[in-house]
Length: 282
Image (cartoon, rainbow, N blue to C red; front, side, top):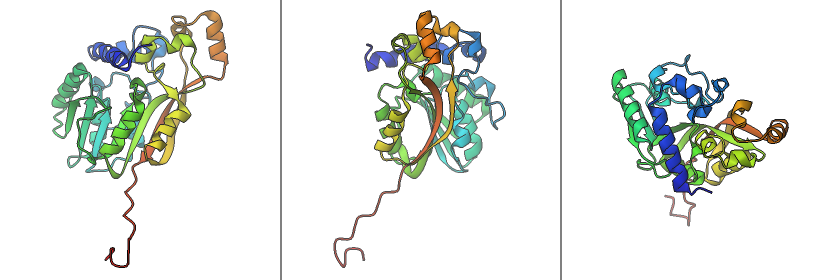
């Protein structure tokens, strides 16, 4: 079993490689995780091409949803994108916050930060910035964001509870998040659970759907809603790298499911202190 630090280093190395690849190369791999089936084209990634401010150079085909589509972003908002990659969701969010708003992308892979900054410079966006950092300890002050978005990233983080605590911290009271992520229903076969490639490929790092939603709730969020859900099917020519024929048959015919979900939740406004006497509320 790899340690949390080893898993994070695995992800950092893999996504550094991905940052140097083009979208077509990434889409012919499992969530950009390494060479596998050409059938994996759009295995997780949704189509961004019809969204305003879509930029092909910033789209590496690594997501599993369209969180910005559901994020209720308003002009003037400050939006934080966790695991911002080459900047795809940041640039879409920027079209919604307008000139008066601000978008901050956070990624812990230096190569991704460099690529995102180059893309922002090409586009002439002066209200989009990218900061290198760990989303378990964000380089941000508290109560700064109106909206937090993330696309297929928390499943790569060992300490998901820590990330939700940080999301709660950086959101303004009454702020909200919309996060697309990969979750499970039922247990993955041991071969998939133990495969490092499948961890970096967004699958074996996923947790149970109910556990994921409970983490959101236990960290103080309210109005928790699943905005979108879709099942993910792993092609057989990927599975043969990790499972034998009988294991593949059991996995594909069983009750286990891998799902992309987009979850929305709000940070509540703190309740005012209760009155302690007849004069203290005056």
